[in-house]
Length: 120
Image (cartoon, rainbow, N blue to C red; front, side):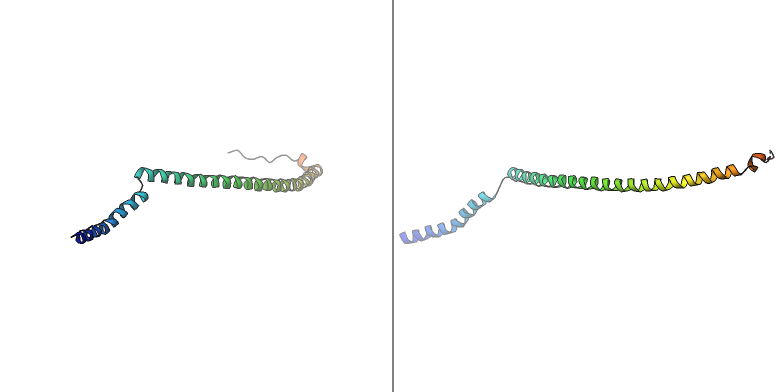
């Protein structure tokens, strides 16, 4: 009878052991909903900070590049404008001399009267 009772006890122990083991392992892995939300919020916050700092650095770098390119463009535009002004100045002087010379030599324009236009 003792052997039979010992066998039943050992069998019951072996049958109950997986249930006990399953309950213990679940407790360490399972977290409450509040803890999971807090952990997710921390991870999201960290990821957001990383993205924000990266975006800040990229924006600053882009602004510097844009400023440099703008300065270059302004410099080139200024040089081209000066060249164009110099060419235009010479052309205007030539044109003014031609018009002024034509007016001096054209005495007929002083003697003639403007044509009368009929009034309607």
